[in-house]
Length: 291
Image (cartoon, rainbow, N blue to C red; front, side, top):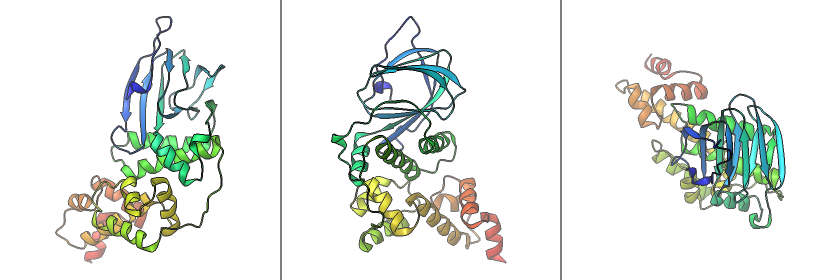
């Protein structure tokens, strides 16, 4: 994963990096790394669009990029955007914790196409210091997904990547408005819903569902929400909860087995999602069904 960066040693203070959490291999088109960095210098050049966010305590940071030098206090939630191929020198006086998010070219291209943008005709400029509430919201959600022992799965992670790509393109590159009333044709929507139902225990992928619908992942995300009334990852969770309810009607089913059969990571994951969706726990529901 560190081939993203070309390190340049300066004054014997080359930064060292330690990965705390990584999404490597979990999501298509989008990757996130939570890491610890020592004080010092580093020279970076990315091969993917990089969006990084300060996670650790406030510290002074100096960034040099495209002839611009910026030195200021960086606090949790502060964001940087660096396009691929743009060298950047980074200097800190103390250790820190960062979240680095990478948007693959395929994801950026498909998202741009769905938004009516010709990605080859725009240039997203480096942003060395931002307060962007939408990126911060995505960043903290990604950080939580990396840190939790009960991740919500590929669909959720890939949805965050699509949201981040769309926001970066819309806010930091020229965009054209897209129609908001478009929906999936009924036949394609039915194929997707049938696939979700028959593969409810699988770790479903946004790319997988988009391929079944015959559209790009970013376009699928928008069309699905317009067609069903909720994001695809929320729909899948709701269908899993409903299937778990069916299984709970069998008194012989062990709760841990019900959770796995319905596609949840474990029993506590099932309980959390069922409480959020129906307002009850599996144990309470089972007692209600059997009374």
